[in-house]
Image (cartoon, rainbow, N blue to C red; front, top):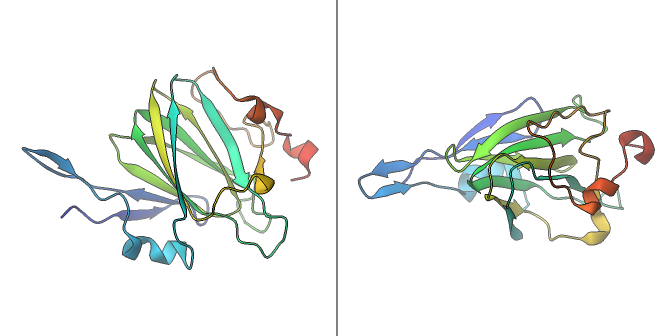
Amino acid sequence: MGQPLTISETALPGVMLIASQPHIDERGAFSRWFCLSTLQSLLGEQSIRQINHSLNLHAGTVRGMHYQKAPEPEAVTETKLVRCIAGRVYDVVLDLRSDSPTYGQHIAVELSAANQHMLLIPPGCAHGFQALEDNSQLLYLHTQDYRADWDAGVRVDDPAFAIQWPLPIRFLSERDKAFESKRDSGL
């Protein structure tokens, strides 16, 4: 039951847009949100270890740009699958992989409950979003447990990355305001 997930490449290597097509009938709708056999090739040996939920009460709220930075070069950082389950968000992925041909570039897509799209974000990329509607909610599937000592981020308004948020930023956490710019952080 339900249509298979459709996977599309984006302009950033390894960042995938995953679409669900609902089965709709007189009862309502049914859609597949996750299928290990479909996504295994993208996840490799990683498995989903943690699921988080984000409620954003006000349009204009920005969360980001977050990533996990392992202190040891050989440590594997997380892959994220991000889906909007209520409302709409402007979702941004920033490539911070120094060996990537798209280092410093970002993509932005609208994720919404209506379009049922999901982003796969590989290790080495920062993630953030802006709520486009009040009460927008996201569901995050992580391949690593959260580790505060690996927590990192870059400023949402860093001119080096030129992210254009569609709405004025109304709410931003003190933590996110404190992230350094690319120039100051040595990225």
